[in-house]
Length: 306
Image (cartoon, rainbow, N blue to C red):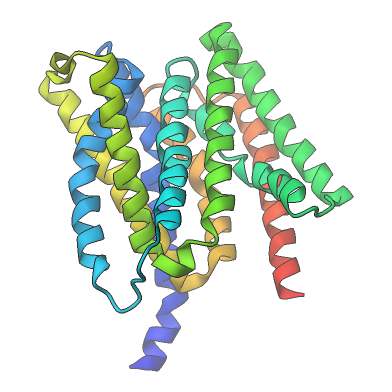
């Protein structure tokens, strides 16, 4: 039985990570569908979190009493709050605002540059010199964003610049979260860690909504609730844990490579459901970004294995 499980583990892990990447890539599609009802970014984000919070609360409660759970200090809780604020609240808010101005495909492509940002942040924090090959990979990645952006600005107009800047700010926030999360994940376990951060960020989003919006803004047509449910469950809860489980089965290096299907999936889904055109500039930009990001991922894997 163990031999059989070991034999199928890479295949199952690959399928799990791929499914998670596709589900997560659909986020921008559902956000765009919600925006067709003249709903603003903070209301859309609140609907997402309202549907997701109960699931994360249940999972956090179930994981609290596991053997791997550890007691948290006040310092740990403060750090969790900061990471939740940066990694899920601020990153999501900037992302949703950016989607008001740019296509789903360009949004996913811009978000996908986060490994280059993590590399740059790490070089400053840990005083590690960026190698020439990494500089080339970073240049390639941002050249891809530029190529895709030139094509998008022709269809989305001058506001595309604003959209890209907001989504890039989202990528920076998420990168800061990734750098800061390395010390807490081993202590809490990935499932408990993810649940706590999503709960905290979800509560911040809800508080933000009630400060700046009237509660009546949550009264929407049935289709909006269906899209909100999809945003909360299909593109938030499910991919979060599928990715975690997939990494456990096949490792972060392989998972990162499989996750690179995300931008391609978003472009195809946007073409199918939003009728966004697949342009030559979008395809060229996607190829450049994928090459750059995968190059950096390969270099990190080589360093770990050396």
